[in-house]
Length: 145
Image 1 (cartoon, one colour):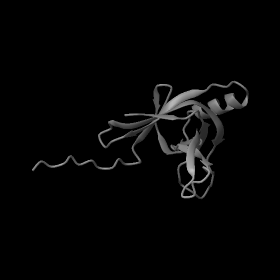
Image 2 (spheres, helix red, strand yellow):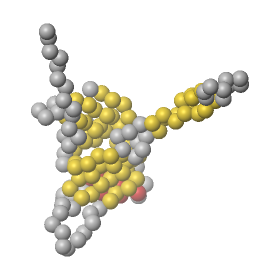
Image 3 (tube, helix red, strand yellow):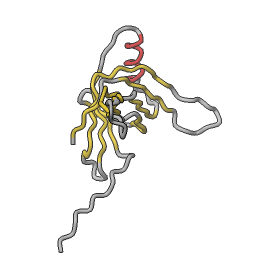
Image 4 (cartoon, helix red, strand yellow):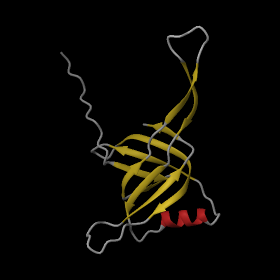
């Protein structure tokens, strides 16, 4: 009797962020990899057992990426440029990799724009890493892989 191929779940701490074709390393957290379909109810006359649901629109939340603060000010500069009217939309990907480093899932986001930059919480009695995060609005996801 042949045995089935075992497929272990992918671990959520193995990921990469890619912006415009360049892998930007060192991110510790990504949130907002989500999509939702809004529906509209339609009650058909004489049908009392259910309500029709029609797809109205899709929506995606902001994407938030977080990393340890370094001397690279790329995210800060992108946010400041946007705030000052020099708007550059960037497309990119959130890439989930397996234990061997091979790409397994890729969510591509399009025309992202930074709308919020958050710096570290500074505390003199803490030995924790200083983090920065940036919130990106975008025009949706597609999936590769």
